[in-house]
Length: 542
Image (cartoon, rainbow, N blue to C red; front, side, top):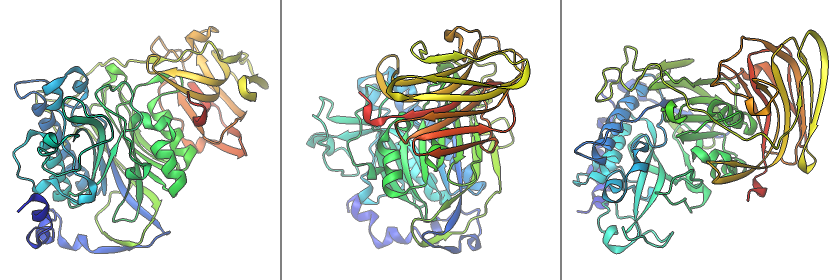
């Protein structure tokens, strides 16, 4: 009997009934509840800020993926005890970014076979002895044992010739997306979705790679990133740098009316505008969607930030952005709308926000460290954008509460206006820009339009947003109103303090008339770093 035949046999299907439910939950909690398409629905999301294990030992890549999948499975269990319906792990959460330092057989030891979602296969049942399925089997079993949706990111080895295809226990078709390399495999940065039975129901190959030469970009239609849950909510997937582009997230939101997005990331902060919580909250609010983000924690390489952002519902956000946080699980309820009718298991839920860290009683320890992955006194690396081509006006230092006006314009007819009051003696600059921005150490070019107020150390624009130098005392800026006449409709707000915390969404309003948008506050903002709008002109990307 083949694996496929085994999986679809009456014997195996019978094992997915009562016996597959977690033993620590009474059967009465699993009475189905009706879900009606178009009606409001609540679910509980769990996102993990995680620093993966990355020590290369005698087991090589297997040791890394084995340890990370074990720890992630424990966090899946912990999320379920908090009532979570869906759990999200970060980009490179299984392999670690050690993947970028190895080649050949060592690189392949970090890769995994992933079944075609059309097979509706649960890797948990697989008894094949192969190191390249260990993590996907472990995490499939975690989803099954805890009856929870699990989204993980892993390196995928996709066979592209007959010989390597014969080694894939899932029997996927030969991958003809690219010319087949000498290894016989095409490697992808892949998000995998397991349903409550541990079945792979979606597989998304990251389209917009960021300095990832080991991988090829995904070529499948954007719909391959979409999946629907038994609680009636349809999600779209995206990975890290995808958030800067149309595909797949924006396209699926606008084409299919999707209101909920799952994102795995290994972020890189670029001040003053590309900062994890600011970008993620602004994208969520600008598109009117809920965004669940799980981030890789390594502040020394500018990697941190995870959260649940509710741009579709009440605008509240639960997030962590702290170099000292180590591994941290955020569990919180989300309001959405059902896209399909059906029946969902009724599970106990925690109201509000629950943040769990290895420091507390719910500690999950990573091998080799008595305190998980926490390292005290950690450095936080920041990169900076070149602002020299921005139009700008230095704002007057505040000595009274009298109102002031400023206006700056740039290319493509972009003009930004500002009305503000300020009692601050610090330096603030009002900026406008329309054109190409170069990111990723000169590799990637995106077309953007920006209207922004930015705090600067001095009147020199090269000192703007330099939070890695000594910060000044707290001050107050505003109230203010910023208006920009953009050329596009994809405009995202940004509002961050010098303490690198978000300003609550209910403390400022956003109004629009066509492509003209206005942001207003009614009270002063303390320790402002950056505020305004960041618009993306996707169609003009080089």
